[in-house]
Length: 168
Length: 167
Image 1 (cartoon, chains in turn orange, cyan):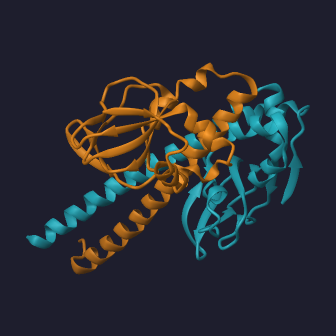
Image 2: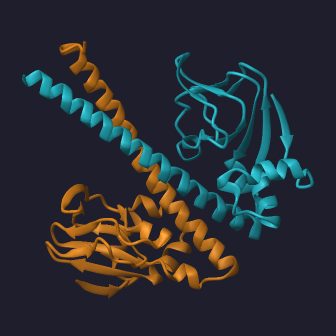
Image 3: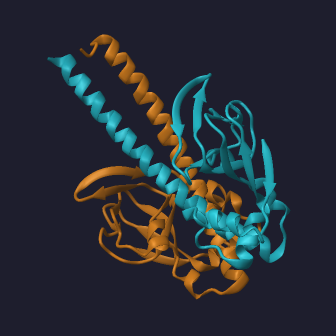
């Protein structure tokens, strides 16, 4: 893994970040502030990004590439969309990582150490909490919408299957 | 429907709001700030709380009573567990309401008007946003977990039916 500080003059990375739906909520003053706290991390194909069982508070935003999500040796999901957020639970509940995330090709992420929230006080803390929970809520809302579509599709498929072979 | 504004001196009301797990972390000034976007709605039997097809930015907590969840006038579910959250997707989704919520008997709900958050200023605004999005995150996490369990269950049913087809 290679880690770089965010370079605000890197037009290519900045353009990718601005396209991330999760950062829609940020105004032009908030995004640079957030990016100052973040690092860019580059992973090789096959490299582990998060290790199941580890405890840290880093939250990741996918810039490019793709990753697999693996629990107890089973692949359960893939992360491949620009701006996909992962690892946010570590920032929120401080519990050990529940899954292993592995780069499936050369992958670029924005990594943000959530422990900075604990060091903040007063208005700054409130503002940062409001911002992060808003980003995370929007991400969850998108996941729920996807999941609801999947439920509808499965219910339709089940209806078709039951017609073909009625249950007795 | 009768709307009762939040009164911080109404100790019974404050107590019943603090009984809702999502509001438990609030106290004193912060509760008063958050309650600026809240009101208590009291409904008679067979009144609509949410109307399918409409768009609004309200979410609700059931305090007492029983509700019917209806899609195209067919009941698909009922809600009667105190503190149940509903209507939360309308807050983030500008899409029209996908179901009607109608009271099956006289009911009381705490309603949060999220559009009100934008009208607050300064510290109160930040405090309310921080509280609200945190609460919202927790509600949505739970909702996603339930939906994923439902998907796993449907997947299993599908697998069973498909296996039957092969036989």
